[in-house]
Image (cartoon, rainbow, N blue to C red; front, side):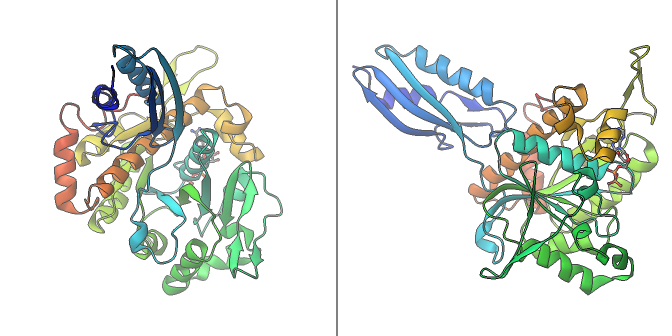
Length: 385
Ligand code: ADP
């Protein structure tokens, strides 16, 4: 008669392509019951946005189908996002599993557009997502989400700010504070750091799988404060293809690396323009910026977002392309990038669970060595746009 050990042995042959570990030792098999050949269990994936969810489920079914004596399979598939940051070390923000800072070397590369559409794409997978618009000098998220009268309520009992809800996202923006966004231009160092800290720690974020933080461009006080105030999962860098943009992105990258903050990867925005008339692809801003950085720094290239008037119009009209045209190639590019970002968060979470300290130079050198076998970083991503 078939036994539970035999079933687990077979399931252990299924390897999560991102984590490169078997699903049994990663604790993804839950509530397993075996009764006279009838097998029942839950496959708990590390994020609903994993690019390999379908592949893992297929491999699980295949592994089980080969076991003699198993006559029936009742498989439930769920996802529970892993903690991609050390909550133990965080005194103020224990209900947020992953914090992702979206950075760029300079303004105008579409960082806010990417941050917003990624947040929406993650939310569409079923994850619980917050968006903190920390671009203190040019908060654009309220406009992009069509929030005309954004405001922040204070929960007197909890003494916390309450985020605004918009299209399934929990949103906090400096733009909600009336004249403050104009005054922000004169704020410096400690005041700015204090405001960011309040937004992070004094907000009732509830239980979030992912908090996306749209940082101001460059290497100023806000990115520095984010890197130093609380443990974050990692930084996502947005660049455009041209040399000048990618070389300033390198500066931002260098700062986060120096602060031992893990880098999730790089996304190239305004990558190529597909002409609706001639259907040819035009590389208006040149090519290869993100790929260059990816191979130079050994960080994953997580996606390419096309240059598209729909993306621009969506942001300007308060209906981002992920909401307005979810089936479009642009939305699919965001979806694919979001899955790759979520996968990187799971990889970091698994490293933390294994007792590593992602971001520390030795840990990074080791992780890069492992990632290089059998695939090179940046080429290992199945669901690239
Ligand atoms: P940043 O946050 O880097 O300053 P924004 O996200 O505010 O940049 O974008 C700058 C401008 O570029 C906006 O008008 C936005 O709609 C537009 N934009 C961003 N990404 C794209 C894209 N992929 N295709 C077309 N327009 C874009």
